[in-house]
Image (tube, rainbow, N blue to C red; front, side, top):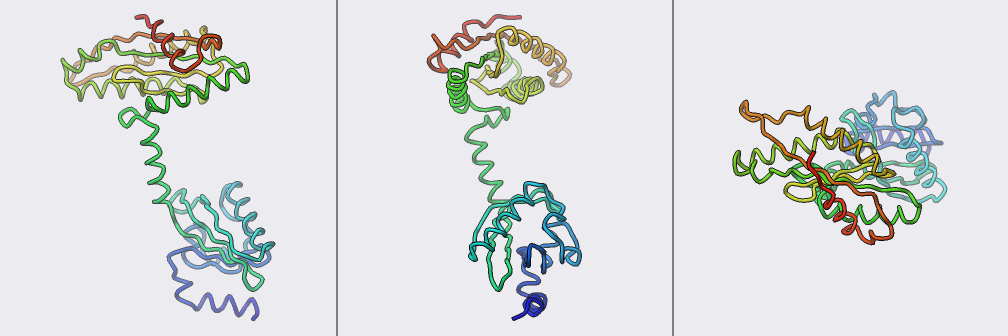
Length: 279
């Protein structure tokens, strides 16, 4: 059976042409056939997809490299392979389970949209590692990442510091203004912390009134700089409810990792908490 005959069968087959899943047929690393759904996936008219090489598709280099690699794998093995791909479509980034099948000297690629599944899995993972109120890492994740930071520091001899930020009058805020206002204060302080973080640093919610910032490759002197930045950020972010500015009293405590005495993250954190002083 010729290639033209095979492709004619696809274009006249409504189960293929109007399949909700995108379908490509690749011949000699060129797109020989694309159904309507493929046009939506690749944000390109179906007629324009025909005879295109993968390098001409409007996708990231990483996505194009994956398409080429998996197609070549199917050709070389003359079998089917299944892979997860992220592609930029007309609806934004979408996630697909793509099946690459070699048949009649061509590669048939079927794209099943699994974006909802990926988003659900991502949300569940985020719930396990992040505080739902502030969006920062939660206590469990803090201790896990902190232990990893200590291990890396001891192995590669790089400095690591932490800064504890505590809202001293949190109980008074909750009792005087209500817990909803207290939550509003926590959210605003968390946003202030995010505003001053470098990409290598991270923040976590320790408990009902305290946060921890982990600073990679940072010394005590740099902790002082970060503390000043937080003070400025908090001062510039007025926390106002019903025309009333909520007074927030914050103490700070920092510590630089000492591998001789900080055997666990607990030890490290306790030293930082003991150093808490009001500014």
